[in-house]
Image (tube, rainbow, N blue to C red; front, side, top):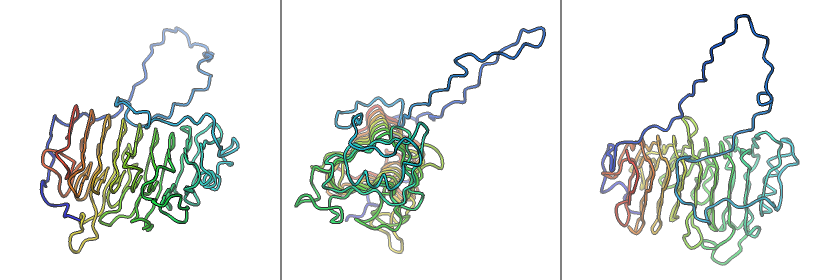
Length: 388
């Protein structure tokens, strides 16, 4: 593999189009003050019907609310109104790790019935997809379910080339099924540290083969190994997709606040080799690439430290970021926001109507593209965006 610390390397941040975008922090809304005009103490007010009516829970909306990138049909949420199977029997206690593991292995359209309140299911084992089942697996949390790795294990696993999950074709590295969708879910505290299957990585989700997409979901505090030159993806690691069709990430959040981001040797949120991505209307923030020595590893180092939010490596692949905020991520080596290396220089990258800001690269990045280290067919195409 060619040295990825060669040309086009500078330290420091330079704005390519405009000054860094403004912080997207919600302002604290002060309540309105009301003057009282009573001469004597008023009687205790009778609550109105609206006051006693139970407030409706806020809808589960992730990603960038100001992102308006068009979402193609293939990237949209799947209709699960008629599920194949339901996890739980209407109470939190009925929504168990074993129920999740069994449902995922069986495949189909999967929903949850865990009661009216949000629930966290701490996984006692990783849920693994059986390659012969499905062919479509949709895991829909309805905005109320958090799947937690408890800081001890990976949460979800799909691998068409794993004999333990069953071979279904003679060319496992390029087959159209299974097709996995996760939507309206939170993945928290996944940890694949020490699991070096297929090179490791993928603290919350590991995917190889078939198709995969993420819609309206949140990933917080996920982890994978802290060192290594090529492993990565604290939240998601993907190797190979059918016919090099892209992984779609739509309206989703990775990190989102200080202390909530992912951490791994490379790719504090997303990582892949030879895989194309389309990231739409999402937020990737406060994620970190914490390895040391880059890739290939410098002598005397364990390697890693690139792609604070996104780590893409391989030959022919593409990355498109649209309607998305990538902010406050950090790389110990290169690409505080994005590390993109196409070894045969055929890969392409597009940034559209997005903001990339405050993504320091402690080691190296490409001149004129703050927070990005890029080697590909030509410079990244940037339209209607702010890099700073």
